[in-house]
Amino acid sequence: MNLIDPIGGDVTLPSIGADSIEAGSSAIAWLPARVDQRLSFTVEAPSGDIPLEASDLPRHATFDPVERRFTWRPRLGQEGVWVITFTATDPEQAFPIAVRISVRAAQDSVVDLR
Image 1 (cartoon, rainbow, N blue to C red):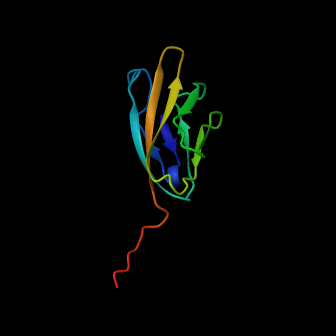
Image 2 (cartoon, rainbow, N blue to C red):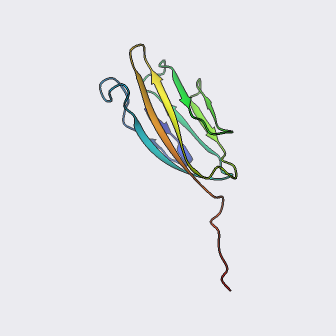
Image 3 (cartoon, rainbow, N blue to C red):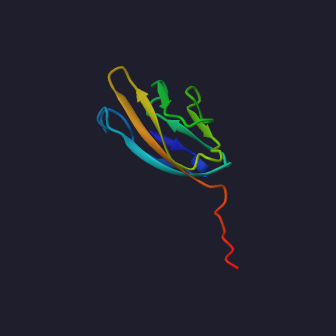
């Protein structure tokens, strides 16, 4: 399974399938994000006909299972690490990947010590 075009670049995860990762195991990807900046990527499964779902979406995040597109603009107060699990399921097994999104403040604070 791959994440396509996150924040303008590709992040490739290990291929998830019966021959590469056992059912119940999970690949992990880390993505950076900032408050008030849009984060969007497509989740690519090994086969286009395998159902794909997302769980543990943060507030205001969306996942379109048809387009397989995750979109989120973190808001003030959502700083921190968020874990979203995308699961591709064939008739025999489920293949999850956990995507950890680290959200930072919109701008780094500058402290004037004068």
